[in-house]
Length: 207
Image (tube, rainbow, N blue to C red):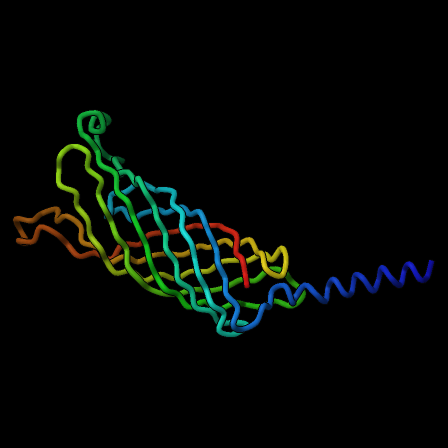
């Protein structure tokens, strides 16, 4: 009985000792993550919240620091008609907008002892592209704007190479929107800084 108890205690200690290793892959490792996300757009962009998807490719410089590139593709974002009359959507052929985000980030992993959980902070910048899809003969409209983003997330390691990952970040997009009073200013568009919230989740593969 003592030998069985000793084996159980030894196995438990070995398991607990291995848990930090799952969350500390070390420098020079690569991370690949497909993800699905939800984007809540700034009111100035006149777009309803939409579902998108994308991928991330990261490289761990040290145990704590990593660089990462992300591409997010959100097709079919509809114009937000809140505040308009109910019959507006029936009377107009409302186009949809494809939104693409591409950015590079610097991540800081907060390593916790005896835990499979790895919180992290992230900040970076890139571009945001808006392509209006018109099917009524109107010329398609598109724009590409700069963006910066910051946020954080959490990784839950299931094994040494696989983790569940969730991200919450805000994108500040430097966009041009229609001027509400072009006659007064003489400009048809206003330059604004829009605040857009992104929530995403995916599976991370580490090599």
